[in-house]
Length: 356
Image (cartoon, rainbow, N blue to C red; front, side):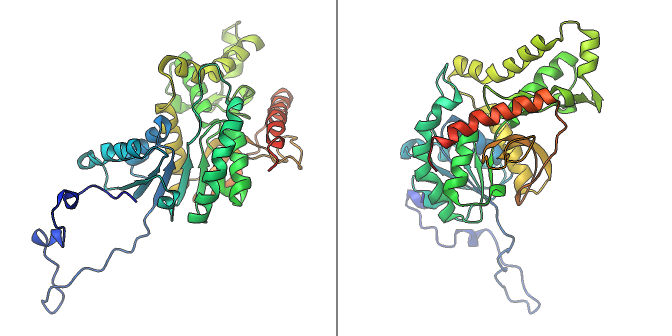
C-alpha cells in the first residue's frame, strides 16, 4: 500500500514528530496525559480506475470533503502514484483527507463506497453497448475482490455500458440490489436540464426534468413531468412555440444523448461533468440525504417491465446511507412507458448474452 508521502521517505526519522510542537492537555491532577483517540467512524471511498473519469470523481469528492480516506486503484503503478502525489501536494488548500493508492484491490478494504470507473475507453462513434464484452472480463477481476474486502460497502458503477455493467456487478458481488447502483442517467438529466434552462433563461437547479431508461441511445426524456418552479413546462412551450412538436422534442432528446459523443470527439473523453455527477451521488449516499436521483436500479415490475426481467435501468430513486431506499412511481404517458419498456428490452437482451 502506498501511503502518503512524508519526510520519513527522505531519510528523516519520524518518531513522535509532533511532540516538539504540541503538549498534552493536563488532567485533573496536573500530570500530562495522552488524549484519548477520537472514536468517530471514518468514511472511506475507493475509486477503482484512475483515468480521466476516476480522477475527476476523486478530485470532486476530495474538494467537497465527503471522505476521510480515499483509496485509488489502477493497473498502471507509475501513473497511479503520480496522480496520488499530485493531489497530496494540494493538501494545504483542501480538507484533511488521507490518500492511499495501490494496484492491489486490498487497498480498498473497509470501504463505505466503492466507485468503479475502470474499463475500456469509449472511442468516437462507438456506442456504449459496444463496450460491453471488453468490460465484463475486467469486472470479473474487480467486483468479487471489492466485495470480499468491503462486504458492507455500497457499490457505485460508472463504467460503460453502465446499466449492463451494474447488472454484472450485482451478479458478481452477491450484494442486495439496494447496494448496487449505476450512475445511469443522472448526468443525462443534468444535460437535459441545462438545455432547458438555457432556453428559459433560468438556473438549471430550478428545472425539474428527468431522462430515464438506458444511459445511452434508447433513453427516454420524460417531457410530461418537466417543470420550473412547480409549473409544467411542455404545454407552455408548445403554446408559445409552434416548433415544439414531436419531431422537435425528439431532436432535443437526441441532442442530450449525443452530448457525450460530442465532448468525446472534441477532447477525447468526458470527465468534469461525470465527476460532479458522481460526487452528487456520493454525497446523497454517504450523508444520508434522501435526495432523488435518476440512477440505474433493479427495475423489474416498474411501468410494465416483466417481473422475471432482472434489468437495471434508470428511474428516480431515493438515495441514502443504505443505498437505494425506494424508487419513485413516476406518472408516465403511455408513449413514455412504451419507450421505457423498449429500452428495458434492449438492455435485457444484452444481459442475457452474458450467461451470469
